[in-house]
Image (cartoon, rainbow, N blue to C red; front, side, top):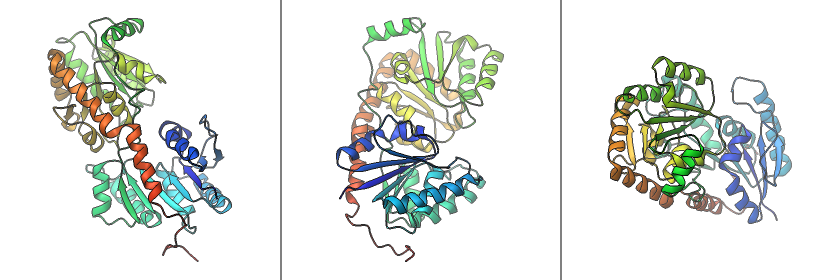
Length: 381
C-alpha cells in the first residue's frame, strides 16, 4: 500500500527553498507526497498541493478555517506522516492531527524562546510549544541550544532529535578559480582589487543590516577599497540606504535587491557577514561557507553551531561594529589566514552540513517510524 505524507508550512517559499530534495527522495521511494500552504503551490514539483487559509499571524480567523481544512485533509487522505514546518504550520497541523493516528513530525527552525529572548517571547511561545509537544511524535531541532532545551525541559514529544539544518548543496555552492573570479567581478562592475563582503537577508530589525553600514563607516578611511554587497528587500531597506548616505559610505555599499542567483555574488566575494540578532541555523551562512568564504557573524545560537572562532571565521559579541571592523581588517591584511579560514569552512560544510548528509539524517528519521500507525495515549477514541 502506498504511503502518504503531507508537508505543511505557512508559505510556498519555505517548501520550495528547503524541502524539495527530500520530497523527491520520498517520491522515488514510492511515497505519495502532498503539500499544504497558504499559497498556490508553485514548487515545480509533481505532487498534490492543497491551498489552505493559513497565515503567518496567529491573530486571524483565517487560521481557524485552516485548522478545519487541515483536519478534513487528515481525515480524507489518512496520511502516514505529517511533516510540518514554520510556527503556524506546526501549531495548526499538530492540532488538526491530534485525534488521528498519523505520525506527526515538527521541525523547529529556531524556537522563538532562546537565550537572550524577550520575556514576552518566553511567556507566549514557550508554553505553547511545550503543550504542543504532546501531539508530536518526532520533534526535530536544528541547533544544539534548542535540542538541549527541549530535552532538559522535558518536552513530551515521543522523540526529540537533532539534525544539521536543511543542508547546503556543496556542488552548487562552491568556490571558483581566481581567474574566473576576476572575470566575473569585472562583468558585475567591480574592480580587481575591490574586497567584496556579502550578506543576503530580508531588511528587517532582526537582520540588523544597519550594523554593517556602521562597520563600513568605521573602515572607510583605512580600507577604501571595501565594498559591502547587501542582497534583499524589506521594511528597513530605505532606512539603511539613508543611513549609508548620512555616514558618507553610500559609494561603498551596493543594495542589490532581491536576488535569485546568490551563488554568483558569493563566488566573487571575499568575505561573508551576518548581523542577525537571532537565527535557527542560517542557510545564507552555510552557502557562504560552502563557497569558501570566512564568515564574521553576530554571536547567536545558529551562528555558534556553524562558525568555529579562529578556524572558519569569528563570532562578534553583541553585534559590536568595532569587533567586525577589527576582524575585517585582519583578513584583508592576512591573505594566508583568509585562505585557511575559507578552506576550513568549506570542508566543514562538506563533512557535516551538506545536503547529502542531511538527507541521510531525514531518511533515518522516517525509517525509524513504525510501519503501522501507532496507538497513542493522547488520541481521543
